[in-house]
Image (cartoon, rainbow, N blue to C red):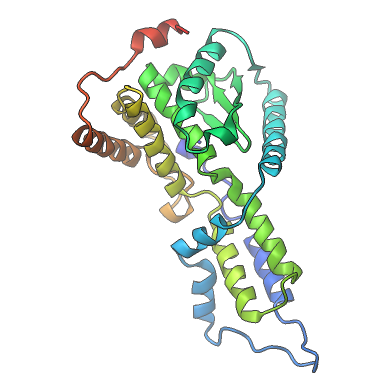
Length: 305
C-alpha cells in the first residue's frame, strides 16, 4: 500500500485478548491433576519473549504455512468487497471504465509479467476510486484499487509504473496473506490438534504476539518499493521518478503531526523511501547501464493507451 503516514492505524489490536487467552489456556491439568510448570520464572524474560523484536525465524515459520489459491481468492474477494462497500457508503464513486481506467489497465498488463508468480495472478481486477486521496491498494487473489488522486500525484508514466509494481509485489510475495497464516497458526496452536506441549505452545504464542503487535511491516513496504523500481527499470522506465514521488509526499506532509515510533509503523518514512530508491537506481545503473530511460510525462498526460 502507498498512503500518507498520518493514516497509520490498527497496529496493536488484540494484544490484551491474546495474552489473556494464552494465560487462560496455557496450563491444562495433566492426567495426575497437576499443572505444568510456568515456562518463565523471570517475568521480564516473558515480556521480552512476547513483545521483543520479531526474529527472522518468525517470518520463516509463517512462510511455511500454505494458503491455497482458491482460499486466497475467497479472502481477497471478501476483503475487497467490504472495502469497496465502505468507499461507496462514504460517497466515493468507484468506476471500471473511462480513459484513466483503461490507461491503468494497460500499465498493469505491462508490469504483471515481471511477477515471479504471474501464473497465479493471471487475471488482475481493477477498480478506480474517484477520490483525490493518494492511495493504492492490493488485495489477495489479484484485486487492485487505485485512487484518482494517485494518478494526479504521480505526474508521469515512470512513477506510475513503479506504484503499480509496488502493489503487484505485495501480491507476488504474499504480504496480504500473513493475517490468514496467523489465523491458521493460531488455530493449530490453540486447538491442540497436534498434541499439547508447553514449550511449543509458548513458542507459537510468543511468535503470534510479536506478529499481531506488528500486523503490517515497513520491511514489506520497502521490499515492494524495490520490486516496483526494479521492474520499472527492467521495462526501460526511470525509477528515480518513483523516488521523487516519495520526496513530494515528504514535502507535502512536512507539517503533519509526528508519526508513530518506527516499531509501530506500517510504512517507512517517505524520505527514507526516497533515499533507498535513489540508492537502488545507482546500483541498477552500475550493474546494467541504461542512459535512455523513459519518463513518459507526455503519454501520461494524454492517457495514451
